[in-house]
Image (cartoon, rainbow over all chains, first blue to last red; front, side, top):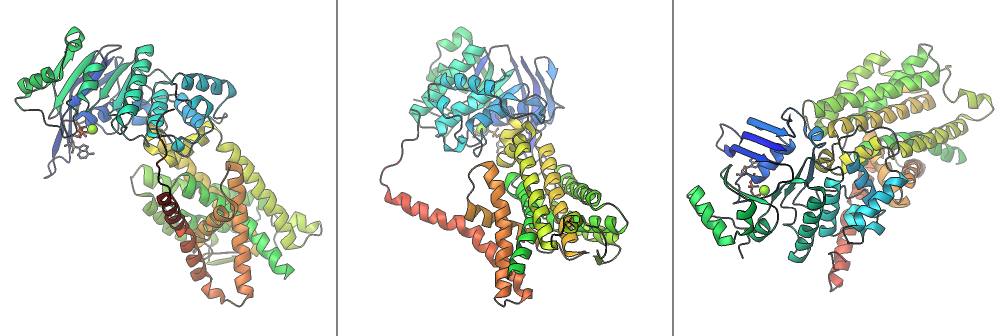
Length: 264
Length: 303
Ligand SMILES: Nc1ncnc2c1ncn2[C@@H]1O[C@H](COP(=O)(O)OP(=O)(O)OP(=O)(O)O)[C@@H](O)[C@H]1O
Ligand SMILES: [Mg+2]
């Protein structure tokens, strides 16, 4: 579903600030793969997701989504295949627009926008149903501005928006990291439910080792712009945090340093 | 006295269309677009030159509208294609328009004497120029509001609003933010130029200097409208812009009547806008003060 071959990205090339963020990442995701991505600060995780989303062009390599080379597509066109949730809960919605307006924007992702009315009554019922599935009471607040929601509610809404059109790939960049532990757990549980019910191919960055082990069917670890560990299936199910740290050490010849990692 | 109030009302209604144009870029797109200073004069110049050349005043005003859209397009291209920051892109277009406007008019001041204007029809029905302008300007402002209210409720209109609020999210939702900024800048400047065309026909001349300071007048009107008449729904927000523009004109007429030197007007306007723009800072102080009185944080997670 997602095929990444030898992807490279260097920031500020040939300056003192030169930074090799991606040093040849290759990654192949099958349909329905739910991949947790971990790695230390500056390992290149966000850069990988941003390169897939088309925020900036990579320097080399290939990105294919569902067999289609998307490298020449601008960010807003790639959005047709992607769903994205960011770390900052403010980032995923238009705060000054109503919940239903935000959902209507997402519903038209990848479609040609016209001068027809931005939202229909039939849609509203659909949104109400979708939101009631979250169990947060948002279904009665369609006419509330998104900025009035709590961080967790906004991330849940953004998740619904990101998955409304069944994206080929769902990209989550630490989408629960800014929330308190209890809310984060709720958002993670909602994530599992949505990904599971649509069998979405998902890349999820997290700093929480337990989340990385608990959620998804596959786990990759990045280090200095490459993928150094790739664990899946049965092996992942029996994984523990010490296992993971040991694997990392063997693969990278480095000990795992991440000032935000939650190890236990 | 009645004459002064009527004059202020007439001018305020014509300027309200300019104010709505400024609102499109400043509030909806979240871009401080200085093209306005050039495009209001461009509208006046285009309409005046066309009318002098014998064009029907309505067609001439439509032409001014289109010219303003082109001015907005210029700023949009400088910003989206050449990646020049919007403030600078607007200034570049504004400066360029100074030369363009002189070309269009052929001289620095183009009088419109003994020619038809969009108000002629109403004047022929026996209305004074001021009354004709109030009726026509009020109708035009209402029409603009109705059209914009519809437009910003459409799929494209919502995409423009989203672009102004959160461009990154908009791109993630498949919105071509560069295209939306372009439409917004074209629309805003088209309205501003239309306003210039109507003002020129009201005052019976177009002048190369008439745009100077207009962006500040537009901002003053936006803010007065928001502060005095609230910003509840989308429709009433547009209506409040008209009230803002008219109130601004009444204030100006008032201070002039009270003996203020006309040369000091721009200083007065600048100070008014500075005070109005800083109002949110004051209200923030007040609300943080109020919050500090509350002991308990509100629960902010799910039900
Ligand atoms: N826009 C940018 N310009 C310059 N350098 C950048 C940019 N974005 C990222 N980098 C650099 O590229 C490297 C990889 O950054 P990236 O954000 O991908 O790390 P990450 O794995 O997401 O880290 P974290 O866990 O801290 O979020 C870092 O050294 C970072 O400083
Ligand atoms: Mg990151």
